[in-house]
Amino acid sequence: MMRMKTIIGVVGMLFMVGVCLAADKEHGTLVQESPIFVSPDVRASRVGTATRGLDTFLMERSTIEGKPWAHVLVTIQEGLVYPKQVSGWVDGRFVITTSVPNGDQIIFGEAQDSERASEDRGGRKNAGQDAARLYYRLYEYFPTSPLAAEALWHAADLRWQLEKSGVFARPSALEMSPDARSTIDDTFIKELEKKYPHTRWSDLGAYDLLDNKICGRWKGETRCPEKESELYEHYAHEHPQSPKAAEALYNAAWRQAALVDMYKEQHQGDKAEKAKRKAIEIAQEISGKYPDGDWKPRAAQLMYVLQKGLPTYTGEKSSR
Amino acid sequence: MKWSHIALMMSLTTALVAGASAQQKERATLIREGSLVSGPDGGSTQIAPLPRGSDLTVTERSGPPDSQWFKVTVAGSQGQPAREGWVQSPALINASAQNAEEIVYGEAVDSEHEAEKSNGRRSAANDAARLYRWTAETFTGTPLAGEALWRTADIDWQIARARGRTPIDESGMKEVIAKYPNTKWSDLAAYEMIENQLCADRTAQAACAEKNAAIYEQYARQHPQAAKAPEAMFNAAQQAGLLADIYRVRADKDRSAAARKKALALAQELADGNTTEWKTRGVDLQYKLQQNIPLYGLEQEQTEQ
Image (cartoon, rainbow over all chains, first blue to last red; front, top):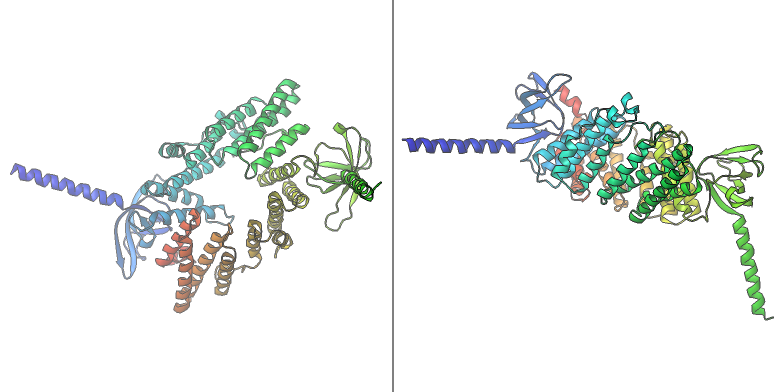
């Protein structure tokens, strides 16, 4: 009897594990915004709106009068209300789970669409946030997809840029020290670096992280361009294959060129000469290592300006 | 003296004279703002300010190399006559200077970046356009010159669009196509010019969606190697999808089905491609078409239901 109970128990446990595994496979997201109805009927009461990219748990699908429906459990946040879990019925065509063929490509395509919409002047409101969520869902639920790493990068970068625009718009961003302003949350970038180290995507993520280290305003202080030049040069040497390596070197050279003007103003000829040599050295490195694209001509222009003694720094640094 | 020696001496003399003349008359520009003044000294009257990228011809030089004055002719723009005067500036760069092409192009890129900043220099976009044009006209035929001519035309196009000028003047784009046919720049110029042909109301008119789809598809077929070809193909597919929706709303089932079939075929071509963005957007569009998810008026439809 005891043995029988054990067998039933084990079978029961296996069944539960099976259910859980099946359930895990039905996680996904929506690729279109949809009202959530209490029952699979468009005349039924609505309990909320499911936006693109929401974390969605699909419980069942059914077709009623030719219309596909999906019974879902979603976590939504409206306004200042704490996130809440809502279950209800949405248009079944909008729910993309791991079992939908090419689901990863559909979500990525919709995310790209949303990202483009966010860049259009008349584009959909919150399209940028939709894009970030869609990218993250792809990474989360399709971890073996060849698009997963790129999707996590886009998700992390969109979040970063969104927060950055807020942080740098505040008065604290006018202060010299980066510690004077809020730090941009680096959770997703760190996740990217951990999951996909030494890739093009982690290189791009590492470049974003520099935003938290650069000065707000220089206020004529040489220590800011000195420190920033070092940061950019270090990045370029640590990530030579990065698509941002040439830009980082140019930023380093430009800051040395700005130092030339600042030291000259302070009548520190030796330091000005040293900064000039350093700027030219970095500019030459750009010409040698990155001959394609705009960075080589920009380096040539910077070298010419330095050799002719033309000013590059006109009082305040240009933002990155 | 042999005739051959006389001929050799004559040709050498001609070459020297030509060389001297070329040295005297040389194309130049400025990579910083400057001033055109009446004489080669600090107390001269200013004739006109000279912006970055001014098209100058140096006709005479005066003074030591480190503080040299240049007598220049400034090419007149938009029907204005050329002006003559003197310039003294280390920012003046001659066409024969080492790396002149890269330096001026680099300054143009710099100005273009400046123009994109919210607090950037006011004249930066026009500076960039002038500097690119100077590069393109001075170093005709080089890879940088082709890119520079395209960028000049593109900046002019963006400025005209921002000013609400319709149709946008196509002369710059046509120049790119004429001077650099069958290149990436002529492909880009042809894509930009599509804007003048599109229907203004792209949302509700079947004729518009049909025309726009045809224009985009024609571009994609005629420029298969263009960087913009997948985007054009996507736009064609999307417009065909919109057309299917418009006919569906009008209960014109046959035309709706035909448009949908066309949209699906175009989306399939994209899905078979290898550009990540356009391949996945093609797959996404294909899914929406297969599932009969409306592309046009979706939000309204949801609310009405």
